[in-house]
Amino acid sequence: MGLSVSQDSGRRGCVDSIRGLLAAVESFDEMDLLGPSRCPGWTRLDVVVHVVAGWHEMLGGLVSVVDAAPTVDAASYWNAFQDAAADEDPVLVLMAQRRRTAAYARPSSATAHLHDVAEAVLRGVDVLSGKPLLWQGLVFEPGDFLTAWAVEHVVHQLDLMSDVAAPASALDLARATVESLAGEPLPADWTVEDAVLIGTGRLPVPEGSDTDAARYPVLG
Image (cartoon, rainbow, N blue to C red):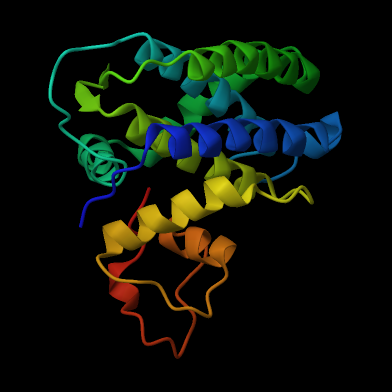
């Protein structure tokens, strides 16, 4: 089951997710940022630095306009991503992230960098054309590219465990992505946040649910 998202909807979700993530980061002091996140082995600061690196990659995608047919949509991208990462050693990935984080003198240096790169990304999203984009060797319609990033952002905002509410526009795109990858509607009694956390393996499928727990997580 595919998921194609219009450019306007993708842009709205992506912009809201960037601003929501920034607000969540701003809600913490430096010591809070050194505390644990939902990601095993990662501090909140590791999440911040991971996002900075991701946004540098995103900028490359935003300017890589191509005349080619899309090869993935907003949901199927995640299958391609998981296939590409299947052989990675999670411990080596974790240690590499810690080295990147340690390059910053203190948390405030990383958050300042986050804001600088965010401004460039927001400008790129604002002027995006309607043509397909090439990124990671895959071709996306613009709305699907922006949706994949909105999902990335809102998941990491939830990873920070802040009191700042994640934006509904991005959460809705993330839930739709999980449903598409699961191949079935999610239970109506799952909140949208729980649906995203379950879909990404941050929470288990609730006991007694009619949903097949073996299907999850569907999104890495």
